[in-house]
Picture 1 (tube, rainbow, N blue to C red):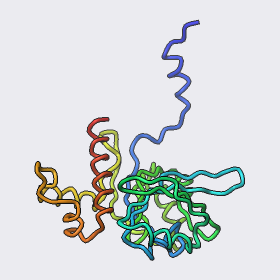
Picture 2 (picture 1 turned 90 degrees about the vertical axis):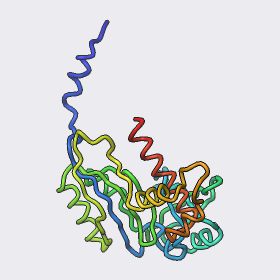
Picture 3 (picture 1 turned 120 degrees about the vertical axis):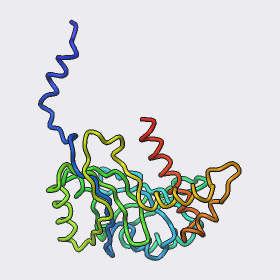
Length: 232
């Protein structure tokens, strides 16, 4: 039996769509008991990027994180006394980062499930010196307000760094963060992309007042975002 493409298209008409329009926002969240926040307060020069969450059969929530740091000893010491997580495990090493698996405790204040419940899509998440920085896409302003209400009810501080409408003409939903834009601008002005280079990553780190690991991960993510938007 042959099946026409139109048959599938007809079946898909009942799918509810949130793909038209919406709001893209960049937020900073802070709370003393946010996931890994005690560790980030003790070791502010590291950058943590959660890779994914998974809940195992016993109900435990495990999180795998990429961590960028000039030295990992202080970070691992802080992990051992962080009340928001337990059972930290080093799962992999790379030249510029390490990957850890941690288990959330009941003390951890989280926001990922609340994002999904409000209809939001997580586009980017990384740690900063003052908490967590997120890029989120919501179908409507009301959904963003719902997420903000969730945070306010739990005393999670919310700072909006950027807010824009998303439409069908967007070539790329994910915008560069302000820190990524600043880094790319300075790197370009100082000749980082020239041959030979006019400035090293160490010098960029000194210029911006951040760690070399922060420069490395911001460059990687920023260039990745640009490539994805232009090559997709």
